[in-house]
Image 1 (cartoon, one colour):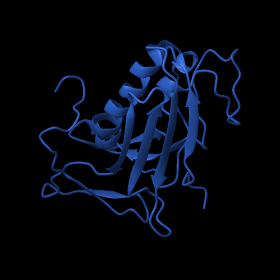
Image 2 (cartoon, one colour; image 1 turned 90 degrees about the horizontal axis):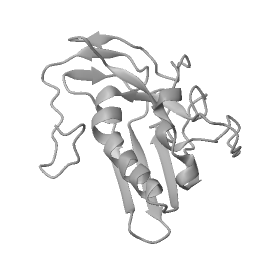
Image 3 (spheres, rainbow, N blue to C red; image 1 turned 180 degrees about the vertical axis):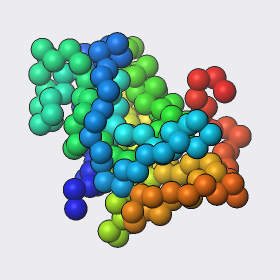
Image 4 (cartoon, one colour; image 1 turned 60 degrees about the horizontal axis):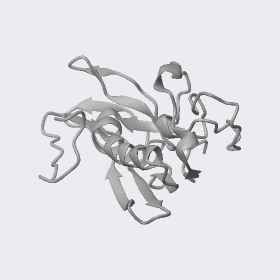
Length: 179
């Protein structure tokens, strides 16, 4: 169905930490892609399965090439339609945990899988797992693909404004950019 539903696994080390200055604009439209803004904020992002910041040297075919200075950017096998909230508020802190472990010279097994229900073109959520070889990093989480004040039709990826759509967050949930 053209979806990135099998997920990707990376066996990562410090050499995989990317220079964000090399990042370029993406043009791939993953399944369920219907972009719009609500109150000036984009509703969906192109969510990386293996985070751009963790993908230096990873070629489009998934092989490792140490000569590639940039991360995996516009690869349809590594992108899915993800809400801005899930990508930036929920997934990003977990990606940062992996990046910090790599910078500290730890090796990390990292797996991320978008989860689709039935024939939906937009993922219901994303399953993230990471474990460092020394055991200091270890998580296994599922993040729902939701956006406050927006209701999605996951079959098509289309959305409508719905101010009744509240996304609860646990008091101890990770936060984004010090919020």
